[in-house]
Image 1 (cartoon, one colour):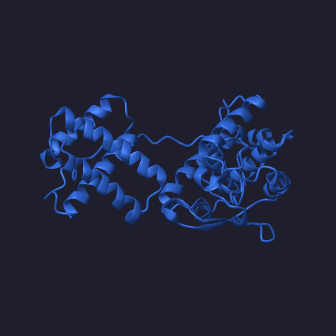
Image 2 (image 1 turned 60 degrees about the horizontal axis):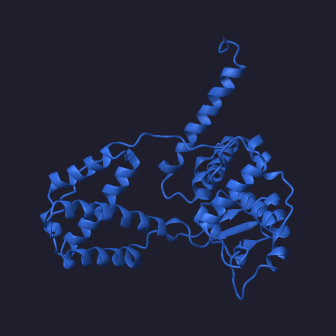
Image 3 (image 1 turned 180 degrees about the vertical axis):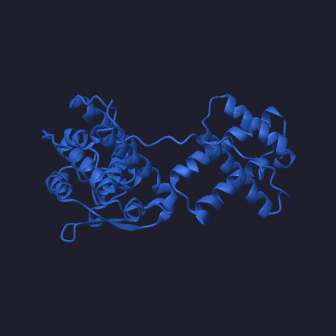
Length: 299
């Protein structure tokens, strides 16, 4: 690839960041996906993006499929490629988008893994023995109480918690959308125990709600690591990742309220079709209840 062709990638990512304003994760995924396309082009000795045609993109996606990528990952990778070529067409570097009509294999619909109420209680009904454990318990309580994404939780600042109204303001949700979500009493109680201890870790004017032991905003990776350590400490038979707490919140709330629209609002989903995955979980629960209670369902 010529330096000019590679510079168009840089221009595209600048456009993506400052005009489309996607999440950091989306930008990271797009960069990785388009890096694979660049390597494909280099193997073909392509000098410019205009040399790629529909069969080339199809062969690239087929090759990625043979490497073991799931349908969902292929769809995302193809979305990144389409977006890049749309940018080139819009700015008159290309006449047509060679990936326009290409479709990736359908992703298999896997239901999100959740914890039952007893497992949640086993995770949260633990007495912390240190400052960091007090912080960790507050993190997990807020996670489950509010159904936040990991990036939303680590992005929280102290002023985002309204103790009197029992509300949390999510300033930078997915798509840079803000929203208000309620927070439960147990989560608030855990925060009240954490905040005085937070002062011993505070570094200068750091506003983050959850701090590392060095006084900086806690990273996503650190939360994942601390949850893994916590599970080992309580001898959890289940491997729990942060998003599982969000899934559990959604599943338990829907099971109790039967209000799909409310779950959509609380999770910050722009489309209700995204939220409907939890109706399948609720249906699984109903089937389980039916099998255990209906006299004609028992073997």
